[in-house]
Image (cartoon, rainbow, N blue to C red):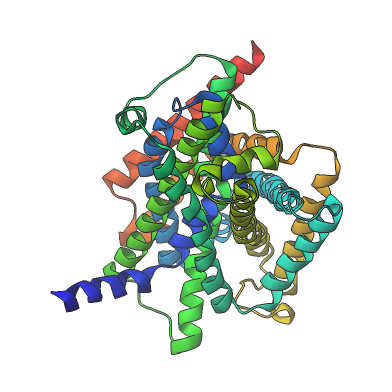
Length: 428
């Protein structure tokens, strides 16, 4: 029995890859602050959105992973070969806009939280992290980089522990999780769209598709042959995706709870600076001397860890899209001299994101606005993913089944309705 359990555990650990990394990247600085803001502003009123988005997130990322495994191509390359150039350019343009804004706000966030400890100018931290991220992404071999990305996900565990410490009324938590609560005003729909947008984000679609291709390339480099597409390979990808998305949404759930139980309960309804966001973790270390400093350190480690995880993903997913359109060699498993165009786009995109931080926008508020932009831009991208995954010419026998299509269509309609509601209340 023990050997059988060990075998299952080893299999789970072995298949963890793009799905886990994608799931952890979903809880980037924008996600952390948006979920915490939802709890701070509306208490437990938006906790149901975490459970609501989970099946759709799993379905969409499974579709993207399957597309990558079956076609061995990224989404841009598939669109280039099978659909109109207008559609291709429109989707990639939206991706670049979303990714650049995401990248810039996350870079600003990790620079901002660093100033909680060292009172150096914001620009010094922003430029320093810009350089560190580029050096790691360009010069560290992909397989080593992927291993580092896996371990950075541990920084999210502080929210799990804090959640258990601060919750006094678990029946209320469960009710808020399973029973939707709606408030018909602009601020509520604005933040609902932000929560959904930071959970189901455009870059995740492109990243997971391309990373499944990277995994196959890494296998080829090791075994000197491409893996055969099989039901087992698809099953492993599904397990990886399922576990990654479950981990991501449980962390998100605890972030909303800590925001509600720590900030909302104490009258803090708006997060305007890093210190306020960090205070959500203070109950975890309340019995320690200098608990505020320790809480700030935990928050900073979480923001910096997930930022270092997510920023390269934003840059790389944009670069995959451009390289596939241009026909350049691509991939994080290639050296700089082998894929200059691919890495050039990464450098340029990260630089533009850096420059966005010098227009006087509050980094904490910018993270929430970024999540809302993601929610709007995801709508047309989900439509394209549905087209691709149901095209037998592209997918062969691995087209989407009934449940995948049903969940993806509901996600499309739900996010479209959310975006329209947002605009309707914005115009009033």
